[in-house]
Picture 1 (cartoon, rainbow over the protein chains, first blue to last red):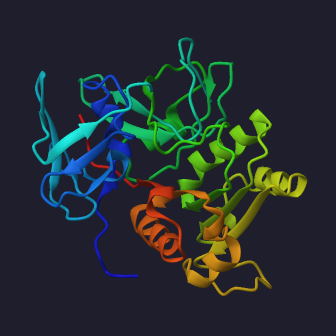
Picture 2: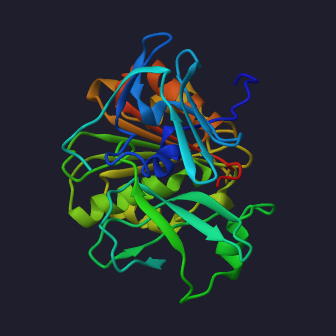
Length: 92
Length: 223
């Protein structure tokens, strides 16, 4: 095993927080990384929760896909790291 | 065991967020996998591992009493789930307490009378750290459609054929479904375990889009 520091979780861990914003489950949603073009389920994104918010990074290139920060009564969502985010409209 | 009057029902593999709020307004949220199979009784079982310096688990495991109320959000997640409509072979791989959502899948299979073929490879430090031991034993004894294999990383039972060590390619080859059967694989555990196990499954010919993963670990404070 490599000595890599596994200090991330995955998109599953952000799903509760994101359910405040999205009506449809995000873990099965597919996104495309705006940096490397890889596509994948949000569940498989690497999730960093050590900071004041959560940061999801591409599992392939580790660039930022999504940031979510709570500041007092406001929620800030930055998804410019994805070219699209596609949901299954038939599932809750 | 939690009773939730307006619980909408869940699917095996999903989790809930538990929020605790102190009298000064400080609150902490943690995610816990649901261990119970979907049922109509509006009851949920979660299994909580007490972390000595945790903020939430010591309360849930020591202070919480029958009749206390908790703030829950869920069920959460629609990707790391097994549904009884799935008929393909299922490969489960658990590292430590990563067994919990996989146990929900095994229980859901039994509750639904599914005939899907399951295999579980369960990696634990030592024999004493096996969760649900008796239930797994009786399940795999009674129903050969659920095959359970153990991997011991620190200490193995006396006479165990494999010396203690991490899961490797040889163990994958001898205990998991051949990739030509195209099993759907569910891997859950600490991040290092998941990366290693998913990598080995992929190297043995399983397609990455048939490998579903859930990583957990002690999480930082969340609002």
